[in-house]
Length: 445
Picture (cartoon, rainbow, N blue to C red):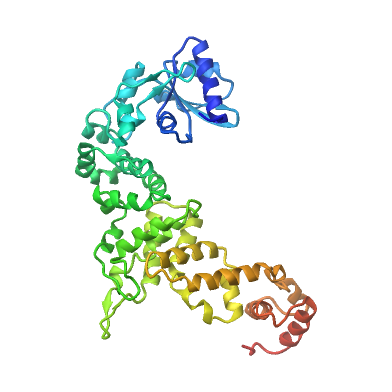
């Protein structure tokens, strides 16, 4: 493998354990990714050393799941999960084992979720242990549960969603018996905390695999459980004039497929949610055309409810909801007054809104005139850094004798508009204008 500081540190940890007389293996996703020739994100280790022994061997540890035999070893500015081999039994709550017994490496492999995640690699000797047929499945690009699918999904219901997420992320097929078990148990996903569901969905809807992720979510029966509002987009017809691609679901799929690798984290969610209210606002006008009046406003309300239910952070909710609410308005940009347009360009959400707009067009009629106009205006504004800051602040107006209150806000707003329209360009001119207008009663509009 290429030079990789995280891996080198993981190997040092393994060597320390082995020198002390213990077994130490790299396990799970890092082994899977390495064998696929991909860059591993996290390095996890499994050992027969008990948590107390791990604690004694490394200066900096954190007993994150000590009762389950899981320790974090902090080394080289990173954290590594070092878990004691274990066998588990009885999952009354569909998440945590009722009983943990420390076992051997093979027992540890057999309790894991999918065969491709059940491979053990000794990093000091290069020996690969495969008790579960993971290597063959990796070569065949198949996702299959270890042992009995029903049992594996009963142990931790989040695995239902992980099956779909891994298949999308790795571009693997889900083995038919495994997929049938996901479908059979799909409604059990509701027993999992919203936070854990959200974290899986965030990984599922990343480019370049987001569209396939959505399809697998739908076919598995999980979409109806975790994002039921999206089900109504299937077969929801749109006006062929603007949407030659088909129904709302097809439009969303196509958009997900258009995302760039460096898409903002919120973008998959503005895509999924921007037309969420089209089914509820569907009407056919006298002109025979399909309309969805108000789907942007209603969509923003629905989006907020969905994102709150999934426990998204507040700032992300606000940005996504705002973008959904505004997504129809960018089309009016060429007709806007300069000041209004520039305020739009200066919104903190503008980069997200612009990318949402671009992909909305690419996922339907493919006309990018508005996008090109907005991009050019954004670049022109960026070339005038003087416009970024207001010429006067509230304190300046108070010095001129304007009392704090609504009138002061009105003056600042109007002054900002005149600055953005380049009617007033210097601080001096702004002070002159402010003096004249502050003197008038609040009647200036």
